[in-house]
Length: 206
Image 1 (cartoon, helix red, strand yellow):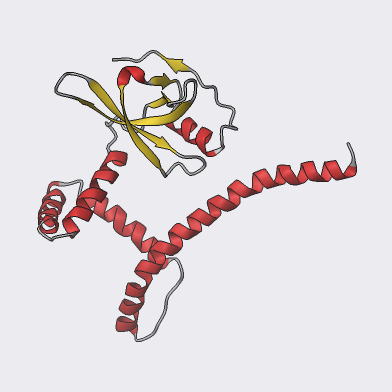
Image 2: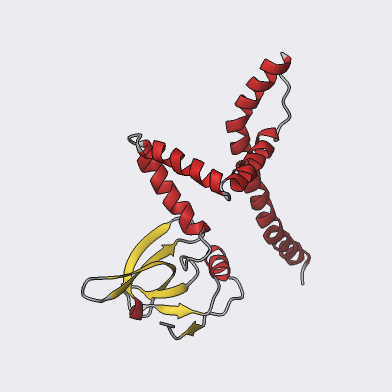
């Protein structure tokens, strides 16, 4: 192997190791910075009112957000907290425009957080209009029409950004159920199909 080819091979190997690490660090940085930028002005005002000085340590807003989120989880896990949340939601539902945003966001987060739901836990393949070409997707919901037909909502993510995509409705018998976990499917989609993941399917369990 020539010197130039060796350098090229080493560079490519380092590139594919370093890029996922840098992207991960960048995403974490953006999340922390975004939360911190929202909460930090409030903390600065509180500190100024208490001490008369502007003292602020970067990242404090994110730490306080984590603490508040944890305490909210503790509060809503008991009877008093659930009642408080219930009455708070009643107030939000009476505010025009706000109630629509709140309900939509709550439905989305409930879909991902409700452990007993089967949403996004079943990976399927859906045949494209072109014969022999398939999409990989996730079943988000099942429902039955008045005539008894069972249909499925299937989310088809895009590559390499699986957070965007489109929704189709298909008959359950038209779907090919894959022997693949959601995590494996996401890796397969993000990596443009380069991961060492076998595409195998199973019979549908009714």
